[in-house]
Length: 324
Image (cartoon, rainbow, N blue to C red):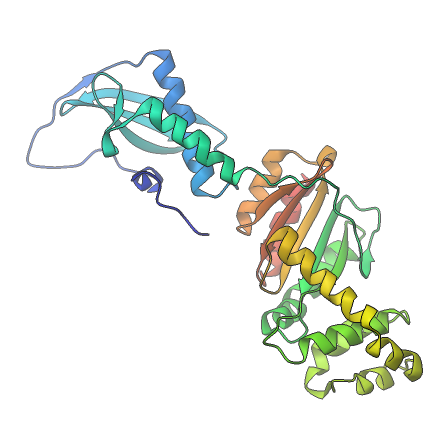
């Protein structure tokens, strides 16, 4: 996950911090208190910082102030963020956070503006499920893979993750699984292979072509003849489909959806779509964090978009989280 340097406040995200340091100098600690408004301001600032630093994928569930003391001429405020204690330092008049001496109210305003950058993009229309599918067409959870038959990481997903995903989630009817095309321009066989699989789909044999291509790509010829013959396709119909401009347009449309709608440029990439009435925003955030995913919203759906040939256990964790 990429992290951004925000107002010199990366120190907030060091994780669990031991606030007691042994030195040769004795530091006097005097108990202190905060007014309610300052407490609420600090809690909101911490929530916003975590939200922005994780690019909108994580909002702390529980933020509480667990201790306030005057130490070395400043106020040390220990804040528990989902169980991790983070020290924040204020001037005695409570007007400035020590890092950069940023006025607290100004920081709140800056964070509110930056937070908008990572709010879930809202798509005007629900995602339309198109392409070859296996599993339960009525399942609440839907995975869409955007893939490239020549991509070695896609092959890894096919070999190491998809079999167990199929056994545990697809064949049991827990999810629907769609395949869409994202052939990368530096893979010379990727687009012809995508075309060949589309033309096999027109004869009801997409998944057979899908498996053949991942297992036999070294034998694939650009016009797809070997694949078509071994799958027993009607050769005349297949060749006409391969030469039809509409076939290429179909493949390119898949790529446009991946790149322009969801910002997915590498393979394999995925979106996981769930209805809003079947899952909470908190569940979606937790699931997205497991794959460094970006959250999108439609009027009726949450969508997590991410890239990477994650092992089965990661998909299992994500799906279990969404299943609730």
